[in-house]
Length: 163
Image (tube, rainbow, N blue to C red; front, side):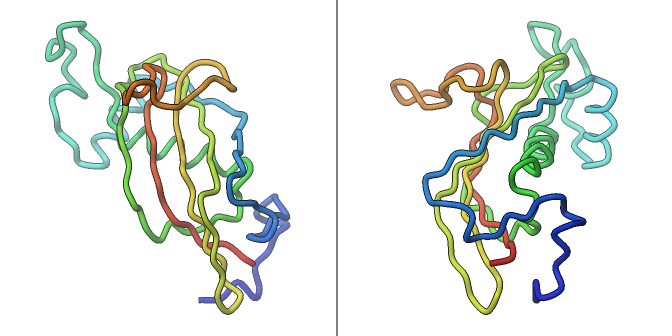
């Protein structure tokens, strides 16, 4: 593996590993509203057949639960605004589906740089990716050991990027 011929123009951002600081928080700015049809198609493609994702009568509130893998995918896609050169996820250290997501929710994301490492021209960045609903800038921190209701996902992973 090598990033020797990496094309920053095509990625859309010039940022390398050295441009990020441990502790830096990146607000990915955009949001995406989840719709039932797209979620159900994606959930079928991921071969998740849990009834709560398809049958509205399976939950007391009559809502179909958005598949957590869909939330992860949307959050990762949103993270490219600010982390476009974090190209390859190479490890998932842990994560939490903190609260449910439903059709009509708008997913937003932010990342925190937890650690960095580099070897032979390849950079690795450890990131905390959080997905949430509501307005940007609100606290995503646990309160008395629990996530606020607007936090959907808290994921700790490593990705590779050019140094």
